[in-house]
Image (cartoon, rainbow over all chains, first blue to last red; front, side, top):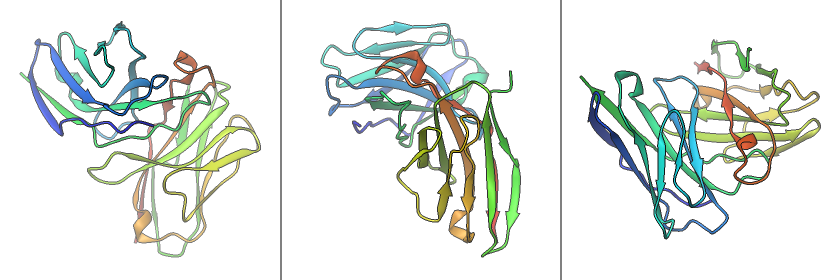
Length: 111
Length: 117
């Protein structure tokens, strides 16, 4: 699995877009990028994942650079309930997956 | 829909005691795993299973045993608890699919908060 690097913390104003970066410069061609978040000691929650194309779902958008060495998770209109630790994970999962969590980014959404 | 259920939610043990953390899922998921999370840290994988009768070690398996006799249940055993095992434990499950498949999305339980004195 590729090592990922994320900033330890970020702030965002409520209603604004939150852009969370992730560096995965050692990612291989068949490894996917997954994002999970953990809200205050709850179990982690899946957000989105992708390989090389940009992805969007009801929760967020995922932008992966053309060289795949980095990605950005975008929460288009952050709310106070989006305050959480966000984990970026890169790996090749064909058996459920051994998620390897890093330190993540602690996002604080402020009113 | 219960999803992934962990019991107990809280537990206090004395050093040397044994106990089993329970994890059950009702989604017919093949894959199940256990993680621990220490204060201010990310999650670390303890053990995982890709199906009944099959288990394997993760990053931090020492001091823990697992077995998988049914698809639904994946208990985690502490044979002789140590203060270093004070942590929050999360169980997760998923289907098993091709790389990138939504089947590989993992669903987590609410956690068991364990203190070993």
